[in-house]
Length: 372
Image (cartoon, rainbow, N blue to C red; front, side, top):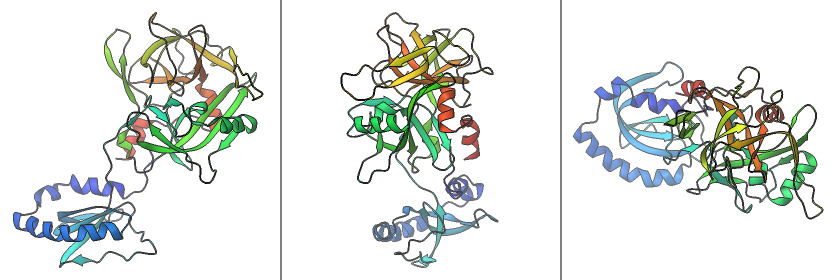
């Protein structure tokens, strides 16, 4: 996950310090600080837009990012999103209030929302819903999510994307927020969509990219889901390594799974794999003069259950995985639709990476460790 700035770790380091544990506030200090903070909080929250937490502490944090020390001292603690930045229309914090020193620390709070792969997502005004595919790190945008383009684009936007190959989500006054279906929680903003029919070298793709809200901490972004392993037992599946199906990670039995918002966890079988691409070509049925979606070299996946389809309406955008171990998933591709035969159409992941200009996904497990 992207580390938004180096000060976000400061609060966590101070809170977990042995010095902090040894210097708890006394009852008298708590009483005095409670009164002063109650007086200051309403005014401060109104005047300082990047101030997001006010509390008290028995220690002060000094020189974080340089020669960091944690020293015993009763103080008022002010948490800001970015240290060292003062808006032009605001005054800097005083060094003390009511003769009590001030400690400005980097940090933030947020609702305990967890956004995970497979969650149902939508955009206001589109009238459809899809599933959150995977997360990836964009060079300039930071942490982003993927889903199917048709799930979050309006009809005229999708036509624009199909004609130009790209759709930049930059029209003034347009709402591009992406929300979760369960709790209508804003998780990010649509930034672009990509369409390519494919050719004899590459598979066709239709996908959209949305940047994840920077206020969402990395620990609240999940790449795990619950499912059933090959032994028929409940298991937690996790896509942390960023591996994609290919010559290095090839699975000869073609067994695969997915987690989507409509049908949750299902197992299936890749019908045909040829040189890391499928053999299926599809063309959208249209009854008007609008250009139909055409995608070549797609995978076709059949459900392993007689009573449950591999995917259904609302699962578009969900990603499909092969595995030898439930904690080491390998990405096959993204669901884009279904056929009258009951099979599911999946865009090969390697073509998606190529269109994004990303050679491979980053190892989420390593990124999580580096952001701690």
